[in-house]
Length: 286
Image 1: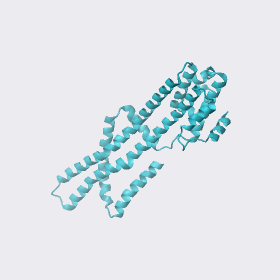
Image 2: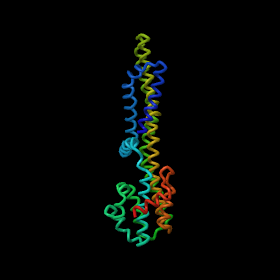
Image 3: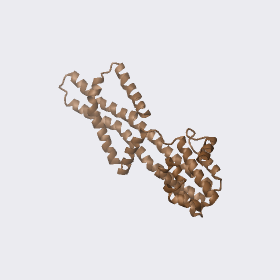
Image 4: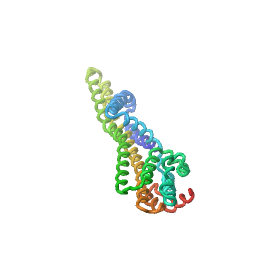
C-alpha cells in the first residue's frame, strides 16, 4: 500500500509541476508507450541475461513481497520466543532426549503444533530443528555451533540479497537505456531534417522523453523497490539471529526464561516485545 502511495506522490509531483508550468503533457503521453517499450524491454532483456534462473525467480517473488506488509511483527516474535521457551523448558526438566521426537517430527509435535505461525515457515522450522537436533546429539562446542550458525545466516542473507542486487542493477541500467532511446529519437529526427520546425520540435521532444523516462523509472520506481526489499531481507536475518542467540544462551547453561530474554534483546526496537509482554504471553501459552 505504501509503495503505491509513494509512487503516486512521486509521479504526481513530477507531472503536476510540469503541467502547472505550462508543459504540454500530450507530447509526453504520445511518446510514452514507444519509449517505455524500448527502455523497459532492453532493461528486462539485460536483467534476464545478467541473472541465473533461480535469481530471476527470487526477484519476481521479491517484487510481490514489496507490495505486502511485513510478516515480522511483534506477535510473530512473541510466538517464536514462546516456542523456544517451551521446548527448552521441556529439555531442561526432562532431559535433552525428551525433545528428540519433537525435533524429528515437528509437525506431529504437541509443542510445535501450538505455534502455527512459526510452524508454517519451513526455513525457520528447519533452522530451529537442525540446531536442536545437534543439541540432542550432545558433545557440542558452543563456539563451533555459533560459527556454523553465523555461516548459515550469512548464506541465507546473501541468497536473499541476490534479488535485491538484481533490482538494483535493473534500476542502475534504466538511465542508460533512457539515453539509448533518446539517441534513437535524435537519429530519427536527423533523418527528417526537411520537415517543418514544429514537426522537428515534436520529434526532439519525444526523443528527450526517453532520457526523462529512464531516470524517472530508475530513481522513482525501481530503486525504492530495491531498498524496500533489502529492508525485508534484513528482517528475515534478524529473526534467525534471535533464534541463534536464544539457543546459544541455552547451550551455555542459562535457564530458558533467561535464554529467551537474550533473544528478545537482539530484535529491532519497533517489534521487540517488553519483558512483561513476553512473560505474560509465555505463561498464557503454557
